[in-house]
Image 1: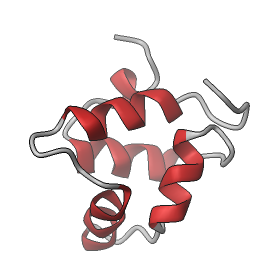
Image 2: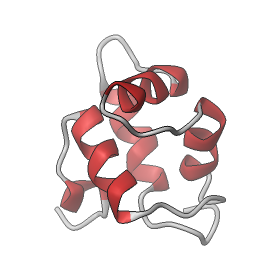
Image 3: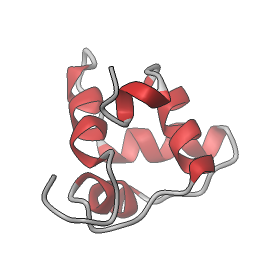
Image 4: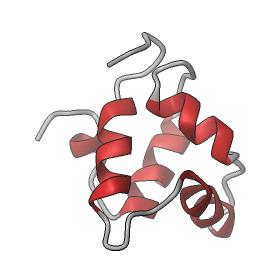
Length: 77
């Protein structure tokens, strides 16, 4: 993890890049918008770099948008 403001940055980036085709930060932002979470592509990038904190609501939404578990994003599995 590059920054210190969240635990999920590296896993968020990994999940995004493991998709086929690879999802962009804008793609993730758009998916979140559809489920009612407003998070810009720039904010997704800041989360990935560990420069932005993540709320529990955002954690759940990011997991849903990326089709992974919250525990996976947290590095627990």
